[in-house]
Length: 174
Image 1 (cartoon, rainbow, N blue to C red):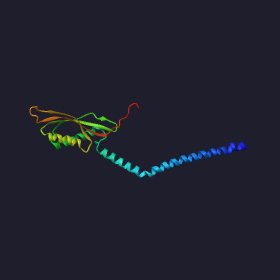
Image 2: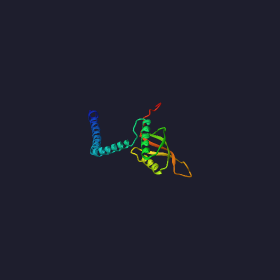
Image 3: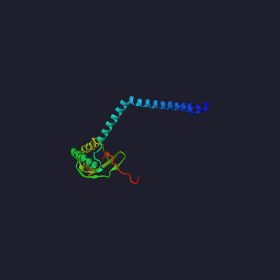
Image 4: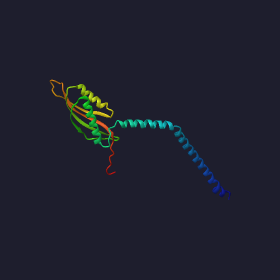
C-alpha cells in the first residue's frame, strides 16, 4: 500500500516539480535575454536609423523609374545636358540592352560625338559624367583622331551606364 501511494502519488509530484523547476530556469534565461535586448534597444534603434539613412542616400543615387526604358531615358537626358554644358556635339544616342543584377539593373547608352577640338571640354564632359549626383560611369571609350597628320580633332563613342532599382522578374516554371 505504501508503495502504491508512493508510486501513484509522490513520484508524479516529484517529477512535476522537476519539470516545473526546469521550465522556470528556461523562462528565466529567456527573460534575461529579452531584458538584454531591451537594455540595448536605444543602440539598436540608432543603428537602424543610421542604416535607413544610408539606404535612402544610396537610393537617391539610382536612376529613377521602374522600367529600364525609363532609366535609360533619364540617363539620356542627363548626358544630353552635360554634353550641352561642355560643348560636345552628340551625333547619336543608342540605348543598349539592360543588364539585370540582383538588387540593381544596369542601363547603358552608347553615344557618338562629332569631332571636337577641345580635349579640355571632352575631359570635363567625362569628369562630369563620373561625378554626377546619380551613380553613372563610362564603361567603354573609343576615340578616333580625324587627321593623323594634324591631330587637333578627336571623335568617338562612349558607353555610359547607370544603376537603377532591379526590376522584379517572375520565375518561369518554379
